[in-house]
Image (tube, rainbow, N blue to C red; front, side):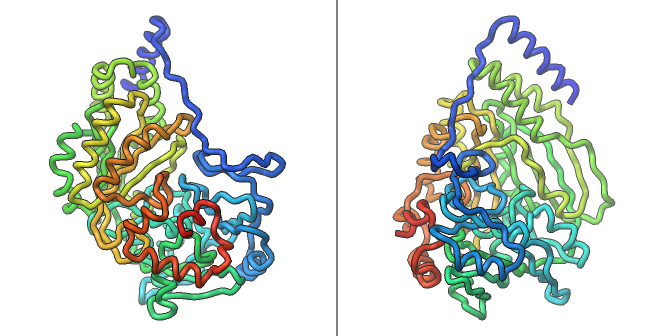
Length: 459
């Protein structure tokens, strides 16, 4: 770590002495509202903006029911605002579920727990462990709310593990009429099938019952390797470990190889590489030497090779999630597993040929298929590729360049990430698209839960 810092300081000094050009950030926010008289709402990255006339935070389900009945115009629920797609923005009524949170009940025999919809994922591990349960798998960002994660089919990684929504065994929601409805495989089964990944378009979820497992310990090993070495064994590695993902650093030839496996080893941890500091370092190197891809590759490879292998043995929930303090915008597509690495290679070539300003890593994960109507993993095992752009820079040229590659291989976009698809496109990708629309109309015939984006999709 010290060597890397000293090298960067030397590089900065040299740049100042020789007046190397510094890339200026580009504006990339999508302002969707102009009413400055109202308090604005923005998502985490600032790419989505609206000015709601009413901002509500019910303390009880009864409060929520009354607020829905009396609300004017469009009603949208909001979690942590970590979605990049325009699912939330409305200039009418925005409802936060932050006060409808926490572990509500649990069933020890079935290893199931009912949890408030507004609970942050980072707040779940400890209370579940206290009742001898743990989530089967977890995504990697700790600030997302449970309802928001489920509504968008948010996922972790693991070739034998499904997205979080596949672990729902029951849920409750408040309808457009203000009624509270329960659903499960045995009770309102079509609503249950639609609501497991519902985009907030069916009603407002109040609580979810999840199938869990007993607490378990994971050994996480992270190490920097040449990307070609990672790619050569990626499919086998995905099948060997409980969890496997990797990151590729553009213009470096290097990737971060990250695995988890079940263990009974004692708790331990080596020093940890800070992802937020790492992103800033990558930005600095980009700014200083983006004019030479050869020099940039040499510098990055030299630095990344100095970072020590990291090993952490901890409870599953302590190993899965992390803080993300450096903001970005993201496009993530889920591709058939057998085609994913081919798509990744094409994305690498496009980025390194045409986008020297890109410095954020690509993230690659593996997910097992499921049977949920609007799950991007519907009926196929998947390799997902996420491409990021620093939040102050214009993401559109990059995303417009890589999206055709994802689409060529039959990719389905993450519901919470940026994409350009229309309702007609989604109808081609999801066999149960019309079934979902039918349930949605039955639940909300007047479209009270549809903002302009969702109205276009489901028209």
